[in-house]
Structures are given as structure tokens and as C-alpha cells.
Image 1 (spheres, one colour):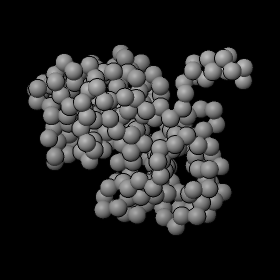
Image 2 (spheres, rainbow, N blue to C red):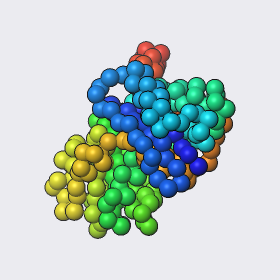
Image 3 (cartoon, rainbow, N blue to C red):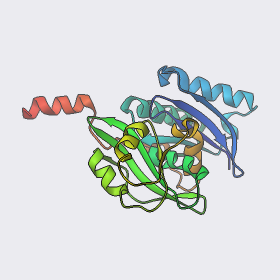
Length: 232
């Protein structure tokens, strides 16, 4: 099965093509340009270089959240448009689960702490353990503060590897604990479309109508509107 994956949930953006053997191609960009400007051209160029078209793709996958509200909307909308036009099934996967696949490079049994900066003194987080070369989920995706994040990790006996754009802040909070904790090297710290493809291999395909963003929290505009309405 050939999978076309999209990742646009944070500052970086990437697209990848994978099959049952593994990664065929990945284009990655961390330039700060808007994903609406970069994502589809990256995919078009990659497919062209591979001499592939959408008709050669069996499944289109995307990181559906959590993450940047705008980035997630751009990624999900792009995939829905492509899938609708090409009549292809889609698969939305957790951004944090896709990130955890970067952790398969670390030793068996490692605890992978995936953290994205959610602003407002919170992280988007989920923790995983590497078993048989696959990340196994230890908790659901969540928006939590530093204290809860530290509490969930401080008693582990496993090596801890921190992945994501919140890695530095998270690691600083773990420094005073007696843990074997490490920040993932930068090439493994960013979200990747390869991880999206790997996660999609183990998820069920959806129709384009079922694919929706997953935010975990209200957007800033929605919070401000709620504050005006309820006077909070």
C-alpha cells in the first residue's frame, strides 16, 4: 500500500510517500513560510520527482491534531480536497502519535515524551514506550501544565527522550529530577510526514467526510468570544 502523508501541525511542514517496505521520499521545510503557501507545492514536486500521480496513491494521511489551529486546518483541508478529487480514502492520525515514531530510533523500552508548546503555560502531550520497535501509548492526547507533565514522568526507571517544539521547556523542567532524560537530536525533534505515514499504517481508513481536525482546546478567537458572552 502506498501512502501519501502530510504534516503541518506546527512551524515545520513535510510531505512523504511510504509503502509497505518503508520511506520512499520525504520533503521537509522549516522556513516559517505559511503552510498554505508550501504544503501542496511540496507534495506536487515530490510526486513529480517520483513519477507518481494521485492515481498511484492508495491512502492519503494527515496529522489531524493537536497543534496549531491554522496549521491543522490547512493540512486537513488540503487532504480532503485531494482525496475528494481523486476519490481516495483518507486517514487522520494524532500528531503526537506520529511524533512518537521518531522515537523508534531510541533503545527498546525508552519512554518517549512528545510535547508541543500549546501556549498559555501548557503543553500538548502524550507519552509512549517503545516496544518491539513501535511506540505504545501510555496516555491519551492532552493539554497539560508543567507540574502534571513532571509528575507523570518523575518515577520512571526508563530512559526518557523528549520530542517536539516544547522539548527544551520540558527538559528544563526535568533537569532537577534524577532521570536519564535526553532531548531528541534536532532531526528527530520535529514532526514528520514519515511519522504520519507510519501511524496511518496501523489505523483504519476513513471517508473524506469523516476526517475532522482535533484541537483539544478552544481557539483564541473562540475563548475571547466566550469571555465576552459570559463576562469572564
